Length: 396
Ligand SMILES: Cc1ncc(COP(=O)(O)O)c(C=O)c1O
Image (cartoon, rainbow, N blue to C red; front, top):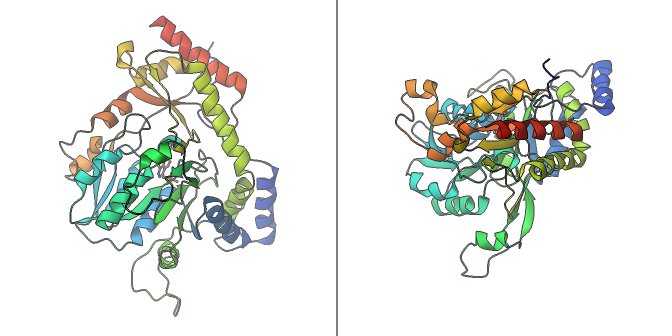
């Protein structure tokens, strides 16, 4: 008999979410105006430590709007990791620019910051770090490059609600920037989403905070915020409605969705603690299996383990797909890792990334997958998942 499946994710919806949604229904504020939109924007921006929040219909739209504020021109380039969701590359392309790819760093699976500078050209306008599976990118080297070459930073924090990066302490006059000092434990913590010129979030049902579908752009810059609001709302002109000088989109979030989001933010600390507990519980149980690479938490990072990813070593003779099939037979649902942008046929057909080779991303795409990581996960289920993983390793 096939055991009941442990799902990879299930959203955690409470009474407050239901109450707030009922308020929208009862008062008729069901579209994109209403008290929850503004409160949701304010509370999320303030939780992350940014001044402005612009709620949009999903994380892909957030990326598109954030890049839209930069007024990119054809031929402009945006540096981003190959190992991410297609939304990042789409947002660059839909803004008329060209994505330029960087391989992953093997420990955190985020963009390898040592490989960015070689990709910078005269056309480079921005860098897009993506905090993968809840672990922040190392930001100081990115800030240094952005300063040196006058580039904007668009942060993709879709998977990193509540994650934090430790900023190296203020430098002494004339001293060189030192990520080392941050690694040693000095410096101030700052939330992901407050580490760039603009940042983007997704609130899809598998995210730590969810609105069903939803997203947000955060920024400290008043002009970017104003432009982002216009881009999400068909670029209506303030002075005269239905008069347009440029093209926008309808990327509005509804008050109904924001109502769910607000209820979720009100217990964000509890949700982040639960995610970290899931991550630490898996690590504790799986850490002694040779040939299984687990997520890390760098000393300068606070990982929220949005999804608990693992990498199966090639020496097992198994790849992620085979391993996942075996786990399914044991009642454990998994999801494969991203497939790098340079391996996507749709981009090859467009003449992009042909012949590119990013070895780390290629390996983790083939050997990596994530285990059930939802907020409803129980300790007994974590035990079951880990027993199933061990059983497969024993049978190899
Ligand atoms: C890193 C990253 N960026 C962007 C997105 C896009 O978000 P959405 O699915 O809300 O469009 C996702 C979605 O999962 C994501 O993981």
